[in-house]
Length: 144
Image (cartoon, rainbow, N blue to C red; front, side):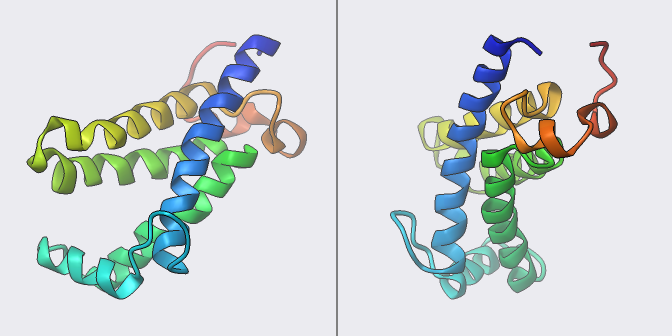
């Protein structure tokens, strides 16, 4: 991957990772600009008819926080980005899109940028480059 492509991947990781960390920390620790305490988030999921809302709330919060951290530093990026993409797709379909397109724009963009990271990987400016042979974690069989 060229330096320009790696910088592009880094910028995508910074955008997705930072947003996901803020939302995950808001749920798990009730801190930051996106606070929704876990009890409130669990109740919200229950009101949507989500099965096992307590478990779902913790899974969502962990995907957001841990997945966001992994994406930010570029560690197991393809797997973390896939989890975030699925999370954002579900959030778009169940929560934001019913409120109108403008309410779902952020989750759509986060989903699509996460899918781009699944496709391209973390780039050379990442922990994956140092620790993980990125070809072994490729989820999409593409020629390099």
